[in-house]
Amino acid sequence: MGETKGEVKKEPFYKGIFFQIVVAIILGTVVGYLWPSVGNALQPVGEGFIKLIKMIIAPLIFGVVVVGIAKVGNIKTVGRIGGKTLLYFEVVTTFALIIGVVVANMMNPGSTMNVDPSTLSTATVEEKTNGSDLPSEGEFFLNMIPDSAVGAFANNSMLQVLLISCLFGIALVHIGGRTSEVLLDVLEKVNNVLFKIMSYIIKLTALATFSAMAFAVSQYGIGTLASFGKLFVAMTVACFLFILVLAVIVRITIGLSLWKIIVYIKEEILLAFATGSTEAVMPQLIDKFEQAGCNKAVVGLVVPTGYSFNLDGASIYLSIALVFLAQATGVDLSLGEQLLMLGILLLTSKGMAGIPGSAFVALSATAAAMGSIPVAAVALMLAPDRFMGNYRTTVNIIGYAVATFIISSWEKLLDKEQARAMLEGELVYEPKNVEIEENFDEVTTSSKTVS
Image (tube, rainbow, N blue to C red; front, side):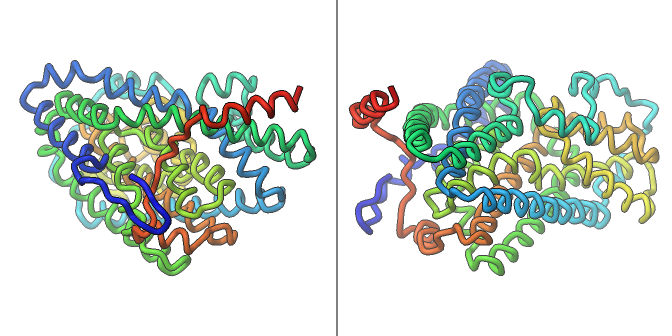
């Protein structure tokens, strides 16, 4: 893909990554269904792809956030962006929870299951979560502070890396002068190197998608889709309604089309859907949002924060799953109990980041806090969870996109003309594919200046 001064250069559709991902999903599904042993054997390929991307996420987030804050140059503006971001996330995820509960009550996906809770065991859920519990509020905030700066990067802890990045960026603004200029220049060049590495990894996208789908289908089977059919239909309806709400918000607040935003990030949505991982597309989303006119500082703050606080898809899933479990086990939840459930979910859904089997931990914690839904019933979600994860990641990605455009617009840090041109196809997204060698002399010169 490329762009030449107003001209849109299009490549054959079969060379596009979107087409390759679609084909990979179809082939992966077929292979996983017909040859389960082959699908199981392909698991390391998909997991290896995700690990390759996770490998560069922490340093990339650090570079993007620091450069963004330094270029804004106003600490009050950065603080205001952070405050508005958290407020927006809280409001939108509350909408997601409410939509999930309403749809589950209307469609009754678990009403015909008639499961006896005494026949279920919590052992499999404990194995899935490694015995993890949701942290208390105090523990959650303490966990945001790393034991060491190196540890935050080594553990790939998103919130900890974000905290270090914000402090570094703010300090860089306060120091100013030549020191700030040199460090900022070096960080921008490091970012270029990381995006270059990313361009290498992205070449494996189709292969990783094929492997991930083949493994998922071979592991859980098409039969799972049939036995939990009503649950999947309910989740589909809830996600569709929530996306409609987002479409209205986008149109009213910034006058853009959500459909065109979705088309713009369709490759990332499909990749996240196939792999079940939102982290697999974080670097690409950051690059795409910046090229679509969103300010670097907004992108750097909103996207990583969203991975912990703006879990729209997960919120829909949790609310539907709990009502489903109550229906499946014959528990009749009153209006008051459902309102209590929503209140508890507002807390438990925010503490999921970085916890093994986070969805099961949140479900178990909420069921235990309510007392009316048997905790053992959470084991029912083990079978459909992998497929429900595809829903979660898809909606989460769309949620990150909407949040980034809206917060950028609120702060008057969105180039709407560039955004419209990119979304309309007048400009073509070009993945960062920087030729590092061209800047070698410049880097050397900067290094000598620092010395």
